Image (tube, rainbow, N blue to C red; front, side, top):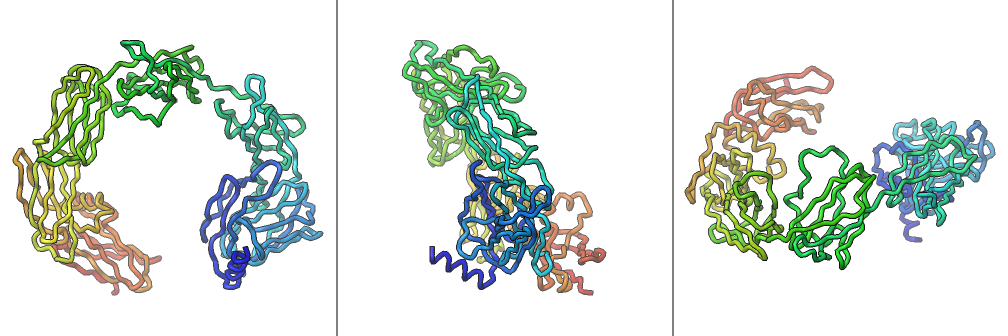
Amino acid sequence: MRALTFAVAAVAIAGAIGLVWWALPGNERVLPLKAQVPVEAPETTSPRTSTLVERTPAVMGRGSIAGHVRDARGQAIAGATVRLVVNEPVAGMPSARSDAAGHFQLLGLPIDRVAVLAEAPGYCPSQLGDLDLEAAPDHHLVIDNLALDLAIAYRGQVRSLGRGLEGVSLRLAAGLRDPTAGQPLVQRAETDAEGWFLFDCAPPPPCTLVVERAAGHRQHPPLQVTSAAEPLFLDLVPIPRLHGRVLDSQTGAPLPQARIRVIPIREALVGPLTPGPETDFDPTVGTAPGADGSFLVELEDSPQFALAVTERSHCATVLGPFSTDSPPAEQMVLMTRGVRTQGRITWRGDPIGGFAVLFAADGSGPPIAVALFGLDGELQMPPAPPGNWLLQVTPNHGARLEQALTLTLPGPKVVNLVIADGTRLTGTVRGAAAEDPLEILCQHSSGLLLRTFVRDDGTFAVDYLCPGQWRAYAAPRTWNGSRHSFVPLLELLDDPGFVVDQTPALQRDLLPANQLLATLAGRAPANSTNSVVELIPSNATQRQVPHQLLWAMVDTGGMFRLPHVLPGEWLVQWTPPGKPAQTKTITAIAGQAVTVDFLD
């Protein structure tokens, strides 16, 4: 503690400006310098205390705040404590007590937007935020009226079906006050064993009482409190529960390994309610039945709900929708035993990742099962009903395989599939500088984008190209974070691309992207830092260039640069600070740099 005190004192002497911590119970957040202080009612830890949860000392500064603490009638309040809203005050923290005239003064505050808290015995604590010391004359602010309301006690009970509810969390907040005089702190309470609650340091009405958490009950609407004279009673409506059993549809045997999930339905359904194709057994999700298959689930606060039931060896089942207000007395879930499809997917002898989909035998209708498989090629499909199906396998890079499957009990169905489709593209990047790290971007007409790195000798290979129209580019690796912007730019180049058919390999040499695009650089007056230089599109092709690739800012030296410019004639526009825009015309040539000067 001594070391911490010394550290804070040292920071105060140095006059360093750091972080002001906005820390109120349940609402802790970091407030960086020059940030706006959130304008909202703060909160206390309990209804019986206004003590803040405080952890980290504020950094001292040269700002100050002076003013008066007054009550609702404008009378001075003596002995009130006023302090900076921070975490864990230590020795030397800025705080003050009001004198007989209600006057106070806080010194050594950080020069930033800050908030202060005022509290006094018998009054509800109040906070005033968004005080801008940086903009104040000499970093000194005067608050004429930091208002405190007389503390009021509110008592009440939370009930359900005529009985008090224990452990219900409530929040009491004052109505909006004069923003220049402060806002009373939000109060919190929790009901006792008989459902009673007490706010004994709360602001006078009007207030809003909110039930924050009451497990198993519908959300109670906010209660507008206009008087503290009579007890407040809140009657909560319990959310119904549903019980039932999970059984095998053929044998009637219980399925204690199943998992039941409640799916709330808050909007009108479109089409029939069916299991999601990605539904698979997960022992960590949902409610497990007992040894006899019986279950009891709590419904959610929604107009309707459905039950999703999964099991390791049975097909996923969805039942419903049901009305939450009148659920079935008991729900029997009969699950059909299914067959798993498993195996290994390879391409040219190597495992490959991707996804697989199981359709009806004729390929129509929605999928009944979907599964991802990793780079080890190991496939595990969710259980599907016995019968004839169509398995469609699509590896990550676009090659595709379809195979008819006949699933029979008990399973599993083992398939080891070899992807025969797909082409390998090889080539060399011509004219690339050795120090320029490049990658190959291959884009299919469907939007599929593949990438690979160029080897040190300038060669490359891209695998698994599916049939169709493709285009390939050699782009700098620095484009990695903005590839979605640069690929549309490259698509505007005059390059017809190439077609992939069933051939196992294709050869195609490429030029680096910087030889297909131009570079624009130039100068502007040194006092125009952060002004904007922009390329103005003049035709349909130029208008397809992503906007973020059409502008740059002037740096502190008056220089600007656009490293990727589509070849052609462009209008370059520079907008000086506070002056009309200036324009110049340039002709961008592939692989060349063009300069433009705005100094004259």
